[in-house]
Image 1 (cartoon, rainbow, N blue to C red):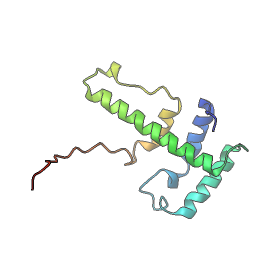
Image 2 (cartoon, helix red, strand yellow):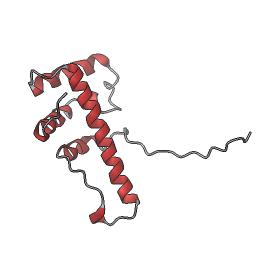
Image 3 (cartoon, helix red, strand yellow):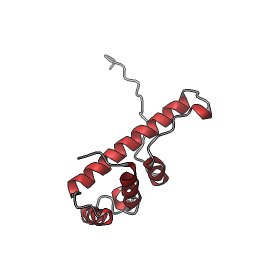
Length: 122
């Protein structure tokens, strides 16, 4: 899959937002495969690019979500480091703000929980 230009990715994210069953984990349709497949098909039609397939759409969503969560992690880590407001990490991707406008409310991004494991204790 070739690298998408920022405009195409931004268009994709704005259409992706319309299909809550693909990203809103608390939606009753999130685990409904029929609803999700219908949403993927509709997303393909919305983008209207003959080079896209269902596999490419699913891969693009997976990649966008991964990059989005990595960027959120960078933002949060820069805030924890004691940086001033001007020094807080700011993602460079044009689509990040659009995706953050709806993904920020999901529970997909969870902080790492550290556990106190004592080796050898009973």
